[in-house]
Amino acid sequence: MWFIRKILKVSWKDKKTNDEVLDMANTGRSLYSTIRRRQMKFTGHIYRARGIDHLAMTGKINGKKSRGRQRTTYVDSLNT
Image (cartoon, rainbow, N blue to C red; front, side, top):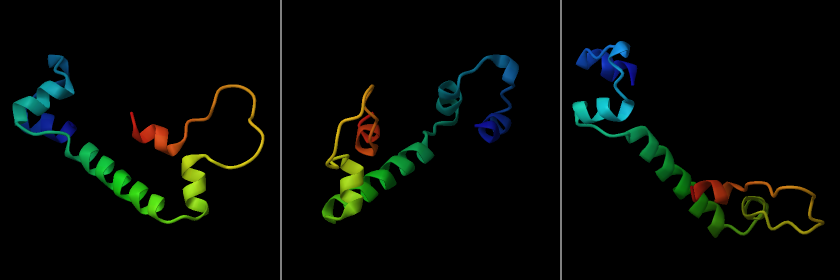
């Protein structure tokens, strides 16, 4: 974000949010969407292959449930 602020000559003292600066530049968060798209492609790749990677990602490993809060799986993090 610092390079967009520098191009638009927006000081950090102006109290502009990152979203406001992006609106001023008529751009979006392309890095975030690129990362999300690559994560989804990788997840589809793992789901099609039925191996140990698939078991680890879905969290369906046989055994005893541990105490306490359930761990967040990789698939759960993609839903947020």
